[in-house]
Image (cartoon, rainbow, N blue to C red; front, side):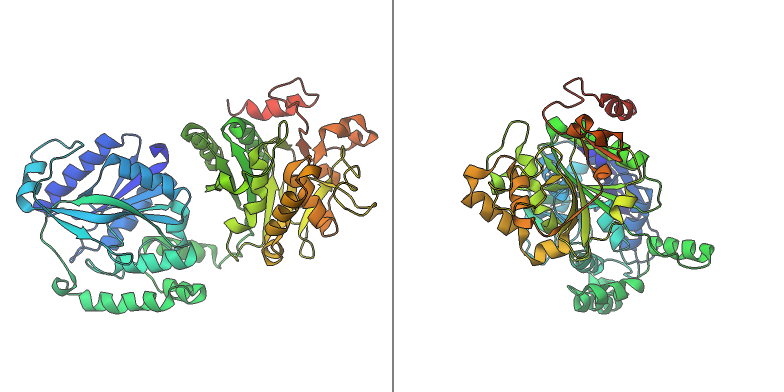
Length: 503
């Protein structure tokens, strides 16, 4: 799990108690989480610029999940694990509700011992935080979301206000934090508040700008455009070198679903997709995971990073679809397609869903650029089923039946027309007529609202036994029970070709 984590610690040397706290805490995390990357951000400004120190730590980080923790805070290792697990699903996480502020004497005793867990804390003050207080000190957030707001605003000089501002920005642009009910421990040091900060009044005024912009994306972006951070400065310098700001290429949003057993085929599919993409459009991959092991998640992340693609893991409660039947090789994860539009905000209007049992042989950008603005989705006719399901699914006689392994989805229209609810209603009302899980119900509901695409984008196994096999496929779909990893499939060589580069 912690192979994906960078622990960011802001720090200012003082040759005193803060130094001793910092070195003890740093050693604590090195011992408890040897797989994690420890990044220390140093700021020697006067007063201490904590925002700058956090940004400098983030600048060093190479992992895709950031734990931001002050140099005087530690916690039960299980709390850290729980926080990281939640951050994979939530926009960002504040892991604590209570703070144990250890007395000066008890802190001194701890610092004289080697860091370990559990620790003996006998003298302390217990702070109960509210939903809206103590937002900083210990946060967990993805690299993508940290960078989406440009890190911390370094205009906050000294302590105070920077966490509130960061919270407002991330809540507005990335999604509201998840607060956990854990306890953290705070080593004693001299307290520095607004009243002891010569820039405290200025910080309060600056914080008010963020408060006023919260929940208003356009307004928050205007506030952030005036922010100061090493990340924004780097971006401006790059634009200056290019002479003008280049038009940002459209991101290709890829969604797939898998469990642990299908993680290996998924890795091969993604390798083929990324290796054959020729355009400079960025790729963002979303894996709707069901019990995928941390080892296999790390493999998927490694593949994405190799080709400079972003990857996020999304969680869907299996209980949502527990009432619906599965058949043969079709697993529960097939229903997760129905929840895809819920995973994105209004800035994303289109996604490309891909099954795990595919090999992508051509640049996926061509498929992505197909205009489906007037349809709920673009899909390819199912070569095996064709029109044999029309009567059972109450579809007109001449309606085509699509295969749901490759879907270009108009998530904007999907949400507006409540397609998930319509499909689930059909599944419940006609469970005796369902043979191919959600694919049947999707066809029944959308029979006249989808755009037929060139079959080269979903060349299915049964196409091999048809003259159409002369066509050169752009996507091979290993439909049916015989897969190239469990049988001697006629197109197995393509799967093995891309697998060779991974395993």
